[in-house]
Length: 189
Image 1 (cartoon, rainbow, N blue to C red):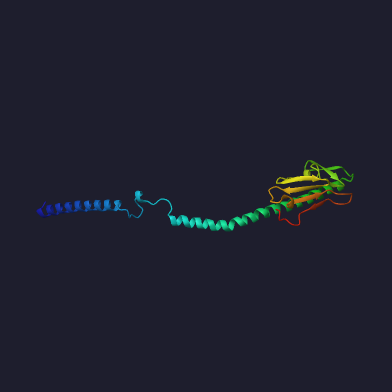
Image 2 (image 1 turned 30 degrees about the vertical axis):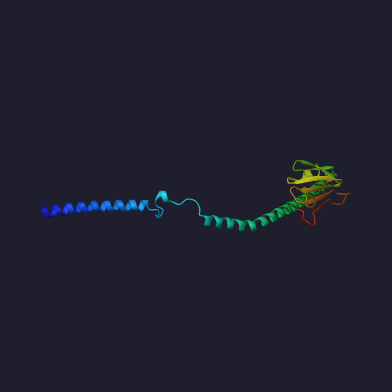
C-alpha cells in the first residue's frame, strides 16, 4: 500500500470517528431537550389543558340548558300517550266482548277472551277486576280504582294523578254501551 493511501485511510477513519461522536452529541442534546416533537416517551403530554376542560364544560352546560326542558316535556307527553292508548284498549276490549256477547245469542253472564272469563253487565264488561280489567292484556303503569259502576285507571307517577286518569263506566242498561272517558285537560300528566 502506498503512503498516500495509508494516509487517506487514517484520515477517513479519524473523520468517521469524529462524525460518529458528533452524531452522539447531537442525539444526546436532542433527547435531553424539553422542546421535543413528542417522539420521546418521557416528554409526551398527558391529560387535558385548562382551556379544553372549560370549553367542554361550557358545551355540556349549553346542551343541558336546552335538553332538560325538552325531556320533561317528553315525560308528560309519554304519560298522555299511555293514557290515550289505555282509553283505546278499553274501547276495543268492550267492543270485542260485546261482539262475542251478541254472537253467542244466549245472553251469557260472561264471555271468554284470550282464555280469561270476562264478567258482563248488560252485554258489556263490568267494572270489576273480572270484567274490563281482565279483558285488558296489560295495565302496568296504572292503578285501577272501582267506585260504583265505574273503574278509574290512574297513571302512576303523574304529578296530579286525579287529572291523569281514564274512566270506564259499565253499561247502565241493556242496549246502552259502556262509556270510556278520557280527561279533557291533561295538565296533570
